[in-house]
Image (tube, rainbow, N blue to C red; front, side, top):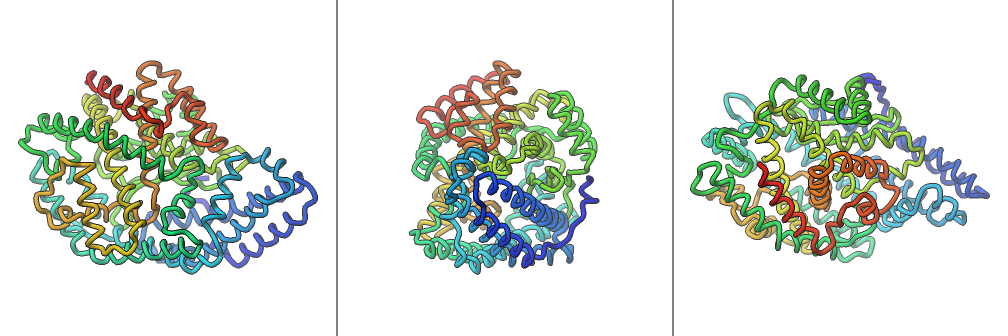
Length: 559
């Protein structure tokens, strides 16, 4: 069904809670594992429909944040869903403690039961008022950024639409665009500080209500870290500081020479060529058509996937002034349909949507008929491998999008992917410091960010900019607000995607076979078990990061 034709009806959350309570009672009265699994199928049907309606509402709200109807729907779900989600935890506790657990574990997998254990550690009925407030705060931040009105180039831009000017080949345009962005954030930085201060204190209060010292432990449970902990993450960041930061510094020096500059400035952070970054050829509609042709050639599975997405209009990718910033893929269970949301802005990032978000959507598509819903309860560190690796698998088709600048795109994409890793680790370490020290003032948090930039991005020169130069950059990173501790997943996944890049340069067919296997494995096994099963080294293993750097250095020599 086309997305525009998908029916939406507000979920009566009182009715939903009653139905969930009925399922809980029925499950508790079962006399065998087989009976409990049949009740569990009713749970799939109920929660799948509720998730579908909430997801459709969420997408339509993001498409136009000033749509009064869906704005009210968003506010309704922000308030009403925490109590419903608590019932899901209550149900999972019954499942977890079932006398027929061996049978159920055989049906839905060990990973699912570990995730239930983490969910029980992360949730309690007494958190509901705090979770309602947390939802309201994150929505407030998202609406603030989405409603940005930035005068530039004779028009009113938002943060997403300003992007093409921030990467212009004209350095003066870049400088003016960054000033416009900085000026905007200066007008809202105090409000963002207030939102984040309340979020930190809210999440800390949730953690302490559950008996944890601070939010870090709770944050890891919420992110379903089911096979690694903060010590392993800290060791990974240590390897990045030792091996990737110096490597990226060399890439930056090469980029400085390529741009013909005496010194790199923050306005050059996303600029790779003196004649400008390669931009996609054609209109957004033509980019989507090129995507259809590309996926038609890549494999039978990707052809079927993209035809389904196109035929059912499961994309909303045009940038608009009242649209939420950023991009994502989500899934609508009732229609077994992935959906891709983005903001095309005339830069190479438009093509990244067709590769990155389609990587997520492709994985959801190939596993959509698995009746065991828990098999798709994927950790983000795994989900981002699907998306980031697809970016590399599609590189051989880049002439379709960039013409004679396809090689420039490939070089930029690889360098940019490498440069991202230190930044992503910085976002993660920042959050650890913030939540381990929840009483820091907004000014102290900005100072922490400034100090981390000197460690992870020592080349940065903000030229005294009053917003960015004072440790404000993190305020435009929405994950810090609505998805705490998510960002390291991009770094872990990039390390795995780079391994697929190295593998495909040797044997594209074998690399694709392993990638497809990983997609189909979904969440049937733990992340640390799945990596070796598809021939990948764990990012946590000492030596992996150094090995990646050595191999990518060789790959870059071919450009």
